[in-house]
Length: 369
Image (cartoon, rainbow, N blue to C red):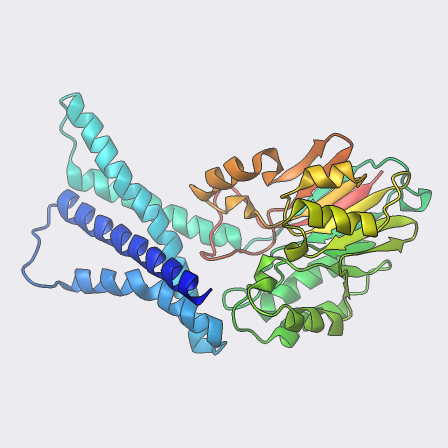
């Protein structure tokens, strides 16, 4: 495992070095700067930036000191900005090459400055957009829903990724929003924590202030399983949240099944858990699980509604395109597979760069007809 992690780190670092080299060469060529002899300040700066995220991430796994949080957040912001700058650099070459094919001679410095200015503006917008949590409301109609549930509302919260970028103030605001919205039940679909070093009990504490009439329920996501997930589960339980350990509970006649991420990654394992839960196909049911990976299994086992997160919708391009190719229509929103309804949330937080472009952070209010 350690050797695999080391190889992964080396590959990531190589990709970042190449991206920064490409950025430097584009700047020098298009802004008509002479490449200075020796090592320039720009080269040193880009070299340090190229290793910043990997170094900050390694520190973040071990320490939760506020200086580490500052360094990690700054490097994550640069990583997102680099993504837009890289696309701007690619666009410089594509547009300039296309213009030359048609025997046009665009002004290279103006073209580069325009594209990089757009990239910078998109980066600023992406940060602001990612910090603005919206409330999305959807209505679902489930067969055989108990009469007592008609008109009731369940809140879905996922992917807050508490740690170095989003901390105590963020989760307190989320809980305060939920208190104002007053749902009947709150469902937390994993990745409450980012998986890095954190004061897990302190970050879970705001949930103790929330008391929806029908309870708050939680399952782990993949980030809670980067290390021993017990510390996260214990912290959540101490805050008064019910952890669903691959089990079914009846909430005023509605069947609620919770499956942790690590136990939902295999078809037969997930099927076995759902069968042990003894889901009654003649009664409405909800499956709370982190990722919309195996919706066909949920449909085959008679689940009425699956609630998930995990995808983030990709957060911003090109990752929005990649996640859409992986998850298809289940990448986001309310979708149907046979008799099963699936809602996949964009999530409330972010992973890696705190950017969102083309996606929005959300709390989802699900009203039952």
